Each structure stands twice: as C-alpha cells, then as structure tokens.
Length: 479
Ligand SMILES: [Fe+2]
Ligand SMILES: [Fe+2]
Picture 1: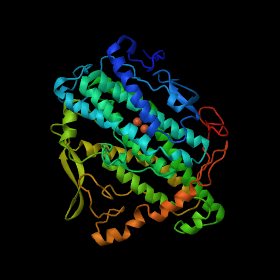
Picture 2: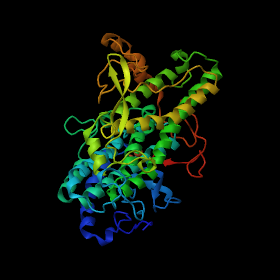
Picture 3: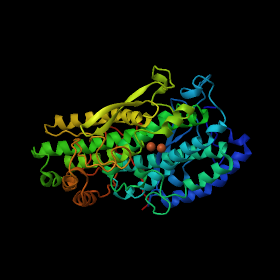
Picture 4: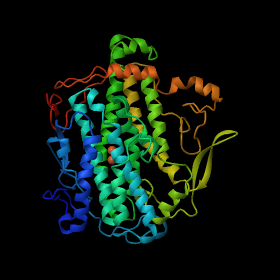
C-alpha cells in the first residue's frame, strides 16, 4: 500500500475505506481541525495559491507532487511508511520479540502520553509562526514557511490517527484537546515550554527550524524505533517530511550569516562588534545572531527533559521509545548493567559522572542532538571565515539559560563560567536578545513579495524549489 488513496475526504494508505468506525471518527474530527487551521494557521494567506508539495506515496523516491494549493484545501492525510517484514522490538525487556500491532495493555497509558506530547508540538509550531508571512523576506521563503506549516498540520493528523485508531474514547478526547490548547495561552497552554514561546521574526523562525525542529527529529527518530509498530511506521514517514524542515532552518540561518559576512567584507568593516556600522548595511550583526542562537538552543535543550529520568527509563524498558539509531548500536539493548556519563555541577565545577544508562536516556538523546547541530554551525563559520571576518558562532554551554533539569535557573554564562547572580543578571544582555535587538529586527523585516526579490539581510538560495527557478511565483498573493 505505498500509494495513497485520495478518493476519501482524508487521503490515506491505512485502508480507511474498509474501517468505517475509524473513518467516521476522523471525519468528525476534521471540521474542528479546519476551524483550528483557519483560526491559528498562517494569518492573511489562507486564500493565496501556494506552490506546495503534497505526499502521494510513501516510496522513498518520488513521494510528493508539487502544485498550487490554497492552504485550507491542502490534502492532509494519514500516511505510514511500509511495514518492515519480521521487525522485532529493538530494546528493553521485550527485546527481540515481534513488534506489537496492537497497544500492549500494560503500557497503554505510557504510550498514549508519548503520542499526545509529540502530537501537541505539531500544531503549536504553526501557532507560533502564524504571523511570519507578513514579514517574509521573499516568496521563496514564504513558500517554505507554509510548506513547513502544512506538514506540521499533517503531523498532527498522524498522531490523531494513532489516538483514534488505538485508544478508543480517551484517544478521541485527547484528539479534541490537541486542537483546543493554544501556544502561549494562560488557560490552555501547549504542553512543553519551548512551544509556548514566541517566534516573532524570521531569524527566530530559522533558528527554531534549525534547533527545535531538530529536537523533533531526534524524538521522531527514537519513536521510529518503537516496538509499537504503527507508531514506528508513522514516525518513519514523518521523518521524510522533517528533512525539509531541517533544510529550511539550516539554509535560512546560513543565508543570513553569509549575507552579513559578505556585506561586511564589501563595506570593509572588520569589527563584528561594531553593530551600528553593520546594521547600517541592512544586515544582522553576528553578535545578535549569536544571542538568538543562545536563546533557541537553550530553550530547545529543555525539551529533552531532566537529565536523569525514570520516565525515560520506563519508556525504554517497555520498548516504546528507543535511543537515537538504536538499531546501529552494539550492546545488549536492555542496559540494566550499563552506565552513561552525564555532566554534573559540583562544588569543584562541572564534572562528568557515570549514572545508570537507563536513567540517563534523556541526557543521551540531548548529547546526540548537540552533535547533530554541529555540522550546520561549522558550515556557517566557514562562510564567516571565508569573508575574512574574525568571529566564530558557538553553541552555548548546555547549562546556560536552562529552565528544566539539573542546571535549571543557575547563573552560568554561555562559556560555562559559574557566576554570582548579580554578575549574571548584569551581563545577560550580552548573551540573550535585548529589546534593542527586537526593535532593530522588527524594523528590518519588511516583506518582499516581488518575484525573485530578496530582503537585504538574507542571501539568495543556491537554487529554487524542485527545478523551479528562484524567480518564480511561489506564492500568488491575492491583490
Ligand atoms: Fe512535525
Ligand atoms: Fe518539523
């Protein structure tokens, strides 16, 4: 069933036409979803024609087709990767047993929680990004934003399918809650902290897609290894879409940084800290980019949860959530006797301490995430160096600006120095975006809606979308 059935209201490759009960449940949920999209989706662009990809198959090659779509007409559907023959539970106490096709009763509550938390992040990011169309640096970027948005919407469908198919009445109730909570709301906030923060501008958007979507990727990778096979197959297909979100973040930050470096070189400005001179060129100074990076990186680290976690141990032992690339790791996949080094702050400073590996799974996934970030940052620094500018972007210390876990609320600088509270407070404007930064960015980010036009602060991409030129009407904005 690699091809998708488009005859129903809800495109799918899960045999919805033979499952009237589930079909009814999803069709009943559909109007509430559309209401949510109209209310919380991209503001001002619901009637625009957008050059979007839509999944038509789950084959690795050629799974998507491109064409103009009005976003509310996007065919959000339920798509699962092909089953893998003979798949076995990859970790925990059931290691090596055949994977589950139905929810194992003893793990039902845990599994539902995992799906709800993942599902909650998907609409949250759409909500956080809903005003960005008004300040898009180009039609190309505007299209990429909307592509990410509709796919996050589809990821919500993916999680709602699992809830409605496998969790009966409480699954249906959770599905309704997923379109009822709102990012940043006092009364009904999204579940995780970073998904209640604002994404006020395009530098934040690209940092969000680089860091926070990458957390999403790490979570999906570990759920793609789940012993509950429908979850695994769902996540495997979501990862195909997620690759584009990584691309948007990586190239978006990269193009901003390159534009700044090139503009500085052209103007003969050598001091990256001369923000007045740099900003006068209509580009974003590198220290401000570093402050945004510090913010988004630290917010994203909080999403991995406490370094030591019995929940994480339970998920793993149950076989519901594995490690990143579990199938490529050589060990017993049970970890009862294994340990893992976790950074701790003691009176002697930061030390590495061995803890039981099962309890350290959140820390481990976070470490994998940090490593996964490194490639992009290396490329960005190369562009800075190639333009002869003496400045290096750096990931802040993992203890900087944390709200969750061992380092929560500690006065630690991005370099990892342990400070007095007063010094920390006094210097925090060096490290995190300031009101002045926000005002500068807000003024800088004026929309560019002409075909092939780009804002002054971002380089053109190296090519257009799937064979289209850069000068293409990626979004037809109704006049
Ligand atoms: Fe997603
Ligand atoms: Fe994403």
